Image 1 (cartoon, helix red, strand yellow):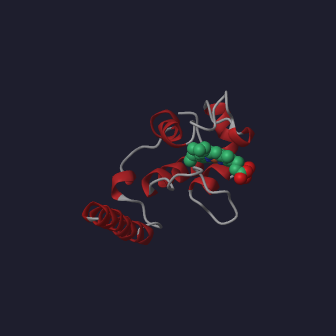
Image 2 (cartoon, rainbow, N blue to C red; image 1 turned 60 degrees about the horizontal axis):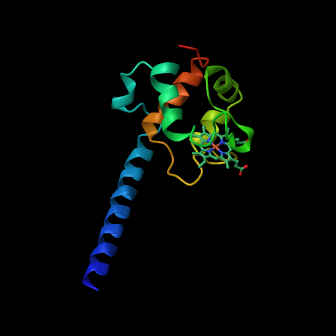
Length: 124
Ligand code: HEC
């Protein structure tokens, strides 16, 4: 009983703190976050690692969910150009939110995706 109660507190506690964090992040959404602003965004150094961490478990050569294969610059580029990459990752209205079954990417990661796409999604 005691154990169950403290587990509940733990769950509630982490829920509350992540809520607060999300709200604070949302307030900052239109401004570049300090931690992101100083980083030069590149495909190889920034974008590909974000896709590795969050997307390629499902969108790879062998099991391309929804027929979307995000392995390699040439396959990612069309999704940058047609708006889907930023749309699904930022949970923009009208897009299917990604990643399926997991939390939205950090604001920093989303800002990096937007910066890269806005720069024309270069192969750098
Ligand atoms: C756990 C598996 C999984 C992960 C992780 C995942 N996706 Fe998906 N993705 C799917 C599935 C399943 C669909 C098809 C969803 C549907 O049609 O309802 C999909 C669909 C898509 C589509 C097509 C959307 C459309 O409207 O045609 C894109 C683009 C996409 N995902 C990009 C991403 C990106 C970018 C990430 C990482 C931020 C990601 N996905 C992470 C499983 C995943």
